[in-house]
Amino acid sequence: MQDVPPSRAFDGGAQCQLPRLRRAAPGTEGIGAGPGHGQGQGQTGQQLTLSTLPANTPNKVTIVGVKGLQSYEPNPINIKVGDTVTWINADVVSHTVTSGKDYDPNKSGKLFNSGGILTNGVYQLKFAKPGTFDYFCLFHPDMKGQVIVSK
Ligand SMILES: [Cu+2]
Image (tube, helix red, strand yellow):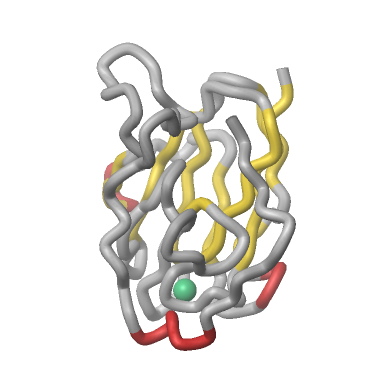
């Protein structure tokens, strides 16, 4: 379930590193976990390219750059359980969509982690549970967003 830490453990040195955050802790369920997805693994979602994305794709979030709470537009995005969010990187540098509020080596990316999304890259993730899901960019932890999933 959602696990929002009460304290913020900001590591200002995180910008220059891209930690490998593949493994979910035991008992941590990938939020998009469903048929075909491994239990206990952080949800990886999928990356594709803008050219293969249907024009009518719903729930799109544009990654605009390093702009704090305006880095991901719209922010927050409100969806329903079972919906898929599609992030599109419209910036000239790579960004990530990584679960958590700030960089924390023990928590970041446990629910989901896109890895680097290149310019014009697309990342999709389905949300199978209700809740408020914080995410940020591993390269630029000031970039913060939220997905609000209602029933
Ligand atoms: Cu970034």
